[in-house]
Length: 356
Ligand code: NAI
Ligand code: MG
Image (cartoon, rainbow, N blue to C red; front, side, top):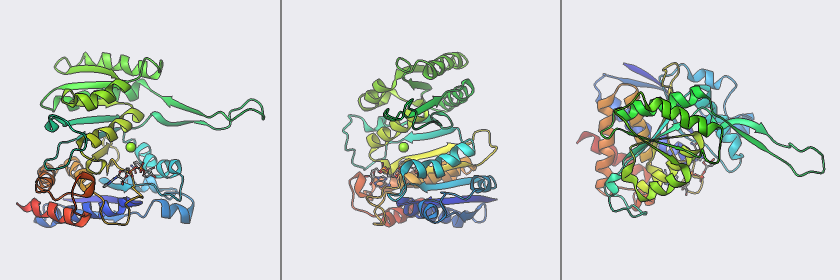
C-alpha cells in the first residue's frame, strides 16, 4: 500500500528533527518488502516562505493538504517573524482548517534518561493528555484598540468560544480512549470557578457524558491545582482532558516531568477521517539550538510512530516505540536529557535498534 505524506519541516530545529524522522520512516519502508511505501511531498512553508511571499502558506495551502493520508510537521517560529503570525499562519491554520479537533499528547517514561525533576517513581509518568484543538481560548476572536475615546489607553479583547458540540466530542473521545487503557480513568481540567460560562458548560457536558461510561473512573480538577498534581501525584493520572490553552500548558509541564520537551510527541487527529491528521512534536523551533545538530529527535520520531498507528501500521509503530526505549536505555541521548549524543547519532541508534 502507498501512503501519501505531506511533509512540512517548517522552521529552526523543525527541519533537523523531520529529517531524522523521515530517515526512520524510509528505513521502515525499505524493510517492509513492499508491504507499504511512503510517497512524500515536501512543502517549504514557514517563516522563510513568509518573508518571501508575505504569508506562511500559499492561499490554497490547506486545501492542498486534503489530498494526503497524513501530515508530518516539524515546528514553526522564527525570530524575524512575530510568533502569533507564524503560529496562526501555519500550525493553527492547518489544525483548524482541517478540523483536527483532538490533539493527543502522551507523557511517557523513558529508561536511562536524566529526570531533572526528581520523582520517587518515574515509571508512573505514563499518561495521555487530550487537548481540545479547535476552539476554546484559541478561537481567534477579538481585536485591538477597543477604546471609547482617543485619549484612553488601548483595550484588547481576546474571547474564548466553548460550544456544547466541541466540548462533547473531545470529552467523549477522552472517555473512549480511557476504555483502551489499562486503568480506565478520565480527569477533566477546567477553571470553572473563575471562568463562569464556557468552563461551566464544559463541566456540565463532562458530567453528562460520564454517565454513559459507568466503567470509567472520573475526576475533575481546577487547572492551578492540577499543575501541582502533575508534579506531586502523577501516578494518579491516566487520561487528562482539557481545553486548548490549559492542555497546551500542561503538556509542556508533563514533558518536562518526563525529562524534556524534546521527547514529547503529539497527534492532531481528524477523528471523523474526512481530512488527514497531523503529527508533530510538542516543542517549538528552538532557535537557541537550531542549526547545531543537537536537537533531540525523539519527540518527532515518536510522533512518526503515532502516524504509523493512524495509518494502520501498528506493528511498525510498536517497533519504533521500542527502538526509542532501547536507545535511551543504552544511554544514547541528547544533552537536554543528560547525554552527549547529537541528533544524527541518536537517529542512527534508533534505526539500529529497529532491527534487533
Ligand atoms: P521551544 O519548544 O522551541 O523551546 C523551549 C526550550 O526547549 C528551548 O530551550 C529549546 O532549546 C528546548 N528544546 C525544545 N525542543 C528541543 C529538542 N527537540 N531538543 C532539545 N531541546 C529542545 O519553545 P520556545 O522557545 O518558547 O519557542 C520557540 C519558537 O517556537 C517560538 O517562535 C514559538 O512560537 C514556536 N513554537 C512553535 C510550536 C509549534 O510549532 N508547534 C510550539 C511551541 C512554540
Ligand atoms: Mg505548546
